[in-house]
Image (tube, rainbow, N blue to C red; front, side, top):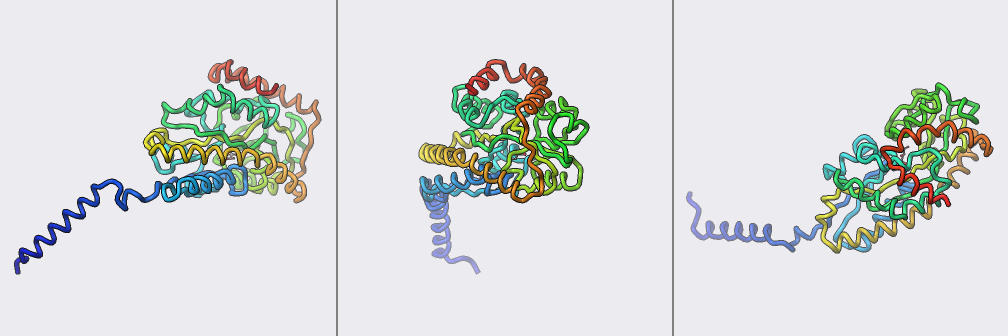
Length: 337
Ligand code: LMR
């Protein structure tokens, strides 16, 4: 049976209408929210975990129906090995790796890894807010990454599976997990220890099974990952920093409608202020919880002990000064005053 002319006309009309709807901007289809995936590697109760949730809350409030932010904590979506690549490929839109993990994209950011560079987190904050610090946010745009802000975690402590951890001689020959950073590799070599680059999600098991003897991290990471359950001593060295840069895909960001860009920038600023205020409190509380658990001993160090660690790590500065730039190191040092 052949199609009746009326039926044929109706089919044509329906097809024409559908094509029109698909082509028209501003239709129901074009109005679906922009989905923003935010992937990170730590637990939700940490400073970064809390700041990411705050960003979601504020962004969705400021841009109702326009954006939907999905936060994936604890390496659920992408771990250390893949998250930077995932942003560049557009598989996620936001990540916040620690500043130690940008080695491959710029040598300048290595400044943050120099041992004993900053006196405390307030000095870090002053440097990040300075023109030199802010300049680093756009230092990777030619590689496709745009920094939108710095988020604090805090100062690093050193832990091992040994009873004695007071001086550098106590770590000689031990294996340490490090983040993917050449500066941190040099730091442990300067101590006569053996560094091993490893993704964050693998650290607990590596410590538990003795693949490595120790690691360096903030109180909040040591607590939330339960490292204190598989380490004997945590020395309060405060020898370095774990902070983050929130980065996005520069091209994707440039293509956003102006109102969305504005709303997201404001949400980022609010989340940054919120998380950065919380970070010290979370780390102090987690240190107390580790002490209360009574599993790992917290080793306090005297000023003299700290000076010995500082001296042992000193050669690292000279080794990386060329790539980082002396001017940047000087700007960072100025923030201690
Ligand atoms: C680590 O790998 O130890 C940290 O950078 C994890 C994090 O994101 O705090």
